[in-house]
Amino acid sequence: MRIGIIGAGGMGGFLGVKLASAGHDIFFVARGKHLEAMKKKGLTLKMEEGDETTRDFTTAESPENFGQMDLIIFAVKLYDTLDAAKLCLPMMGPETVILTLQNGVESVDLISEVVGAGHTIAGSIYVSANIEEPGVIRHNGGANMMMYAGPNGFDEARYEKVAAIIRDTGMAGDRHADMMVMLWEKFVLLAANAGLGAMTGLDAGALCSDPDSRPLFEMALTEAEAVANASGVALQEGLVSMFMERIDALKDQKLLASQAYAKLHGNKLEVEWIQGTIHRLGQKYGVPTPVHSLCYVCLKPFADGAQ
Image 1 (cartoon, rainbow, N blue to C red):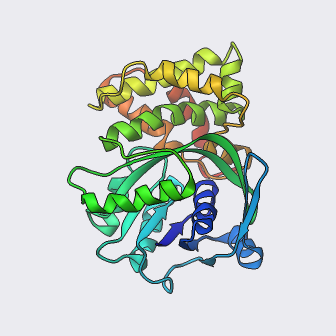
Image 2 (image 1 turned 135 degrees about the vertical axis):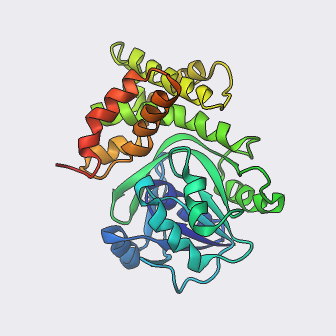
């Protein structure tokens, strides 16, 4: 397939190298020093197991000359969503599918406002990776799986493109029966890790290994779960316990949330779409969210990067 990837950070870079190694034609939209490095020396993926792979790609800051894509992987931060969605338009044909891997629970609707309905589906990816330096992606572990789902009525035939990339990257995963349940199931865990991680600079394993922070992490999970249920999204029973067990099993891996990484490096934060979403929906539905609301208030001053 011809696959365009908007955003060459941890998720986009990981998938791009993996998919290129499987024989797909990959076109990256990137920017800044990372783009410059990719043009000069390609993109290197350093796997947790120690393997390194470097691939050369067609890369540009804008995709006008890329041509039509079979699939577009949308992997930018939430604050860049609307501008990045416009970059999809030159790569789109009638059968093009956009797979958004963004955090949060509103991405499909936001992108569809720009590109139109019927093209965009959501992916929930459980991979820990980040830009180690310009031109280099560091894979830190995680469950290495991806679930995916589209809005009600999405064309069944188009799902095969996403199923193919899961097979070709060697990840586990499958189609989920309900897009909003899928998104909230990930968001519950991500929000707890992103909020407390950005506040402390610690990853989920470290937070849950400390007897002082572990109850706060579990409380953050419970708050997000309650907000989802109040929003009309019925999550599976025992979700919080399952997440705590999963973190305990993976505690030796560096499960640092991307927002925590951004805070440590003085970059912009997605706090309005993570803690902000839980804070606002909690107020709307009368669900107390003290952990997330505190994180929201404390992180808001850093939303645009280091002060």
